[in-house]
Image (cartoon, rainbow, N blue to C red):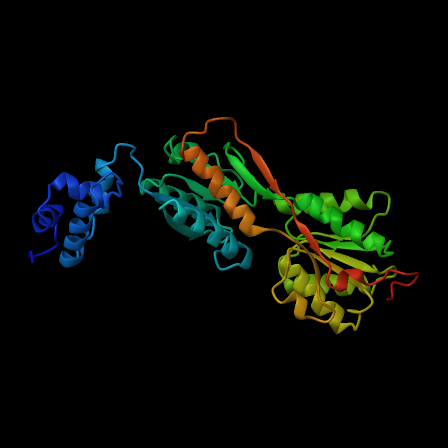
Length: 338
């Protein structure tokens, strides 16, 4: 055994091979004689050798680090967690390490973390933008680090973008309710300044066409959504159905409907699926995104750019799916009762 941290020279001496052979085995080259590979691996195990990542990167001709970055709003959020796992699995299949961070809707944090990943020379970055402008990427990132955007489009920087079909999904929610006899349909939405909020509201309004319904914007959390729904349902011309623009808004509306005893007479379709939505009574009809497919598609797009694809940036839309479970199938009828 050697004293201190074992080196590749130590492994070579222990295995009775050249330093170049150890390097080729450690770097995964497949043309090394199997007997030599076995001897090197046995020496590595005996000496508890661990490659020095920084030194190995300096020796690589392609200057790649074998890492990619992923920045999402909150990796603990169910949508982000599924997207994260899809990217992680895709990276692992290529032998890449994934570095991840949460942005918490903080534009300064977005730029700080993007810079931090650039300093670590990640081979590429997948980013869910939260700031109003991503032009800083042209200054903070080397030109050879490709960026793919997910969930929201970027501003001020061109890159492949993978988005859910939010406008089409909102339109499908409205058409589903119209087919069930509803004519007074309300929309309760989140931040109308966000691209997702704009797309969903636009899809709602276009599907209603000449049947305008009440629209409430900028509801930040479940309590605000609950209050807004109660006001609408106590109004002179209450809606017989509600479309909610975000998961927290769906939670608030469910509380309002149950508190008023209207959960069986007012239809509800949520944009974004809700954990355990199928266990409620009635179970919640939702227009679900496909975060796993979004993550896989974003990873594939990034790998293509890393491998040299240089055509103009693309926008890729991943379709949503309406999942009928009960709350969206309550009949409108003449009075909005089932």
